[in-house]
Amino acid sequence: MRFLLDTNICIYIIKQKPPLVLEKFRTLEPSEVGISSITVAELEYGVYKSQRQEQNRAALSQFLSGACQVCKFTPTPAHGAAIQTKPARAG
Image (cartoon, rainbow, N blue to C red):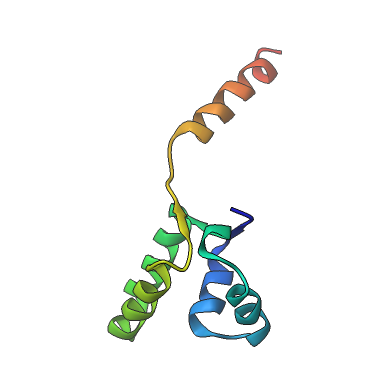
């Protein structure tokens, strides 16, 4: 994976605006692009909040169906951060 997309970039791609972002995305292979499971949750939240849930659900489903890899969230990074702060707190 070369690129990890944030929520805003995913929205640009789904809405196909601005064109420059969409053009760049189309040059990439699905194996080169990923999004985090947290980004998926944020996109899902946007669908639930929207006035056009059915249309937005379809657009999100289409985007997620093979356009990129979804990186699963695990507690490992948070655990690593907790371990890293222990020496600093000790003093």
